Image 1 (tube, rainbow, N blue to C red):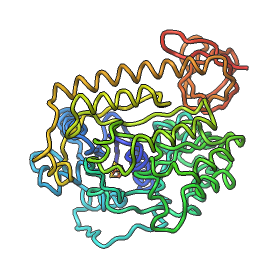
Image 2: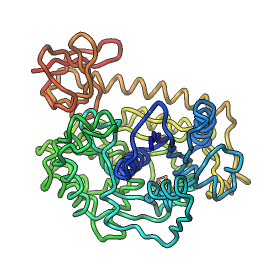
Image 3: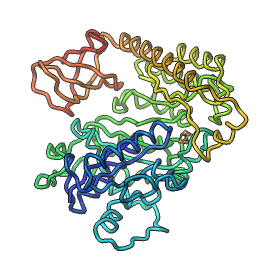
Image 4: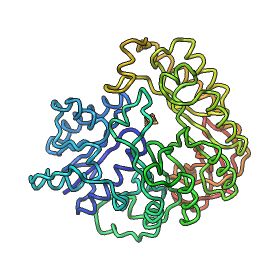
Length: 453
Ligand code: SF4
């Protein structure tokens, strides 16, 4: 039985996809991109656009591979199931978020043995961590993605995620450390199987990427802390680089800032934090129910930057949220311009059924599609400008770099110790996943160029 899988959306989705791949390989299935018997899509529901993309992929796949069974899971699939929006889709199986971790078994039972498989009442257990897998997308450069937490208790007014993923659930620190070590020390036992091509290169990892829906909620249910998790990974694993998919604003408190200062010299935590802000206007942040002001957010950023001026800070911004007039948009623009944030991912607001914003939209004013488009474009230009400025700031720096892949003419693509992309020239023999020392020399056509030293 051959399978292929694809994940939309956040890094948690990507990590889940790879966990599923591993489960399917363990069930004896074979990875096949071109002509799979089953195609599994881990969907995203954060915006209407994300849902549209998932629907398009489903239809395209059905047209291209009419005999392939299509399985959907993830946030959009859960949303469609709850709201009865999936009946027209040419799918063979829908598995909601609650049952996602048993997907491999469900596929086997439901699609290939036709017996009923009732999973209601199954619980999240420590054992499920064993079913996670390094990401194939990241695997070729020896980066493993590990999901540490799921769910969220925040209920930001625009967000559908807590309704689809439920309340916070965390893996135990001990299990996460054990899992990382088990992958890092694992001998390649997939050589004889047709699987991810990257798996054949073995498994000594250079980076672990910790992914969570909300890092703040890590340990709420287990009584552990996010800082202790990082500390334990530093102490009990030999992975040279540790990074996060995102780190959420409520995790950046004084303990975290002190901890960051303390471990800076250890040089293992990647100096890149993606911290979702969502708006630079206090009035909008309040309607979003984010629980902080722009001043508080800025203070966190500045304290981090004081410790390390080369820390790369990025964020998510929603434009066109309810009541965002030109005035609030300008406040966001001005905040982003002055803040130490060097890259923003911009989303255009779209109402998600059942969220607070969905109901608030009945009485609050929502910007038009054109206004949202225009604002997104303006912020993208600002993001590009700030990113270039940060690249310039890195000129002349010595840093380590993780090699991602080889380009032509003795050029390699890599990531600096603050995750800035860099092109490295060297005639030495280096491999994806290697960590080398470089000096950043110049910018060429918008790309940082470094030489190996
Ligand atoms: S913190 Fe807010 S935006 Fe993030 S998942 Fe939770 S509710 Fe959604």
